[in-house]
Image 1 (tube, rainbow over the protein chains, first blue to last red):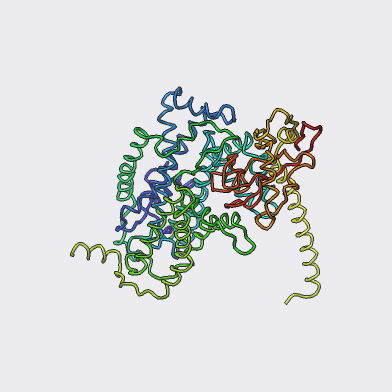
Image 2: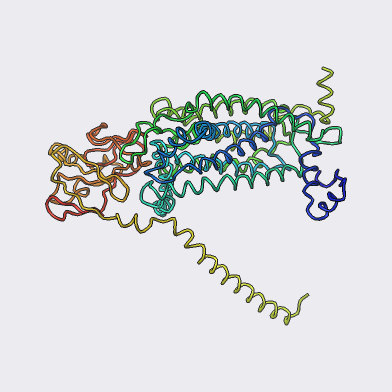
Length: 416
Length: 175
């Protein structure tokens, strides 16, 4: 779809520019005239919403860095200084902190949309893989950002997570010291995390560029999963989807703004308003909500498997839960993309979504009693879904008949 | 089909090509290493690697937490009952078998010196708590006994005894 061109330079200046650096041609082809399936629903607006989220985080983050001091003695007060003294700092800091949560809301919806509509299937595997890389980098960036206010949860979250490295056999302790720049979380750790927290969003932005580039080769998937066959299956991106995306962004900003203005701390943890103290551990360490599903998987492995002890086992499971996403395009071999036409898949997918919410809930509960049992069950289903259910369903399921084209499905709906 | 002569000249070029590449790779690695090594603990961090501490102020049955290399360290003045309890435990009951004697300095049986980070994920256990009259880690529920040995819970190892020695009867040097 990228080969045909719709741009004719209108003036001599445009012609001159087009012969040297065809940016206007590029923008017209990819941001305005790009043929987009005409049946995309609102789940498809989260890509644009995520671009907005990244923009919000970068703009507010660059501003916060102007007022912040990455030093163990000053960092905690610097954040309070931003919230109390800096002009508008109260709102800008809250936007950045709430923005991280909203970013993950949009990320998870975007990923679940891809999983339901089979957007990872050929020829879109690379788009999916780049997306998983963006997700992992975003997790790392958010984690390092949470260290910067230097509260109790910042410090102990960093301690617990950096101890994950010490689970690696033989070289684990050395890697941990290399990461922390000391024997425990301290000033060198805070400095390097600040540096990387500033860098990684730009790396993410670059991969987002590749993600969209890869998207513009085959074009969008769509809710019925049938490829575009003719031009009447599509509408130009502008104004149809620019406006739809903008409208969705406005809707998305309503809860975002509510949190920023009325409950900026509700998603955080009160312990993070106590300055970091390396001699006192909070009674109950919890990561930010968006990391809870993976934290549950880490904790669920509390038993030894052969020569792998429980600590290393937990780390492998948590890492595996993320890395496994990379091979999803080859685990689900069903030719039908959209879950709408897969009668069995639908139910397992719904259960997977509920299971993911349950993993989130369990991560916030103490690791005892019924919670540890449920954590094991939910972790098992997470892995079974990808490693067993998807490959088996691909073989045994009889999908419903597909519409022959996007236009047929749209018009059929109108008649019904 | 290539002749023998062509083969040998190609091989010579291949050799130079690979040799140049290899030298280049070694050079690149030599440049990259300092960029990674700067992440390792710096001289000011390592300078704190050895400290002295006077234990005489700690009454029996109490502990203090001191800092060594940025890590908290428990120094506990154990009661006779605690020592006896630790000695009575058969090694077969232990997940990470160590006798009480291996965890203290001979002749200083009442002093227990340990890094205060749980060997699971590094939280600080609470003293005089848990089911074995030792320490209890609230993060993920590890119980340690009165010799700091892991008895129950997810932690894989006993609380770590740092390298230390008694410089005099009351002065210890850690590190």
